[in-house]
Image (cartoon, rainbow, N blue to C red; front, side, top):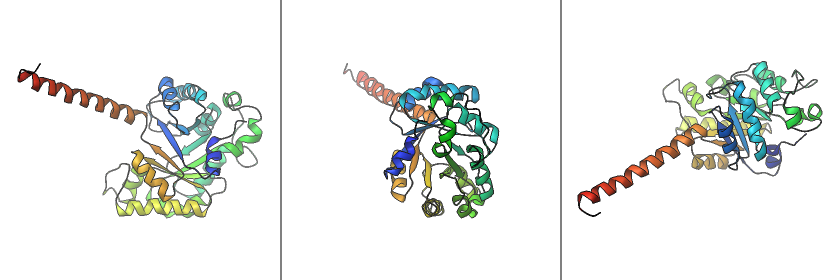
Length: 269
């Protein structure tokens, strides 16, 4: 089986950057995967896509050698196993609030005797190479999302779950829950209570020998997160990057054309 490059990078003590796909299109996935990310995750939960888009997106990413991952919609075995069979080398599961739920999540990713994953690697048996059944338990990553007040209350139990590889922080939902809706959801938090929550998560991960990952809005904030001890950061995503680049291009055009118009009014053509 082809080895998980994320594990190799982390073993060398280096952080990783994760790309994010919310647009259900194989060409978009291919473009993003070719930009130098260590991993790229398909957002099945909130992305504008369904399973019929997921498989060709994984196929399109294969040529780049990027580690393919997916965020599933919920803690539900069917979609977790289908995403793995389609080619995911890591699963990010939302709204994991207790140690029991974390253990349940891990069980869906592992073949017996370590879990209850059903065997039927339709595509991944070709994409991942030989001996998938014998090596998948060691290569597939399980990331539980901590994004609620309840999850923060059970943080130590979640982080201590056998077989869990890491905690992935969803800052938008975490902000809503931790502050009881007082603060609007969003990335790159600066509020003291949110920074405290992030540092607590890093500490829990380190204490249990697992990885800490954070969804960020900017590269600058992601770099700060790495300094705090996060091992993986996601920076923006396809839809946000497309919107930002398009807005910047249009804005620059308006600015330049405006200058020409003003100059023309003064007879400076």
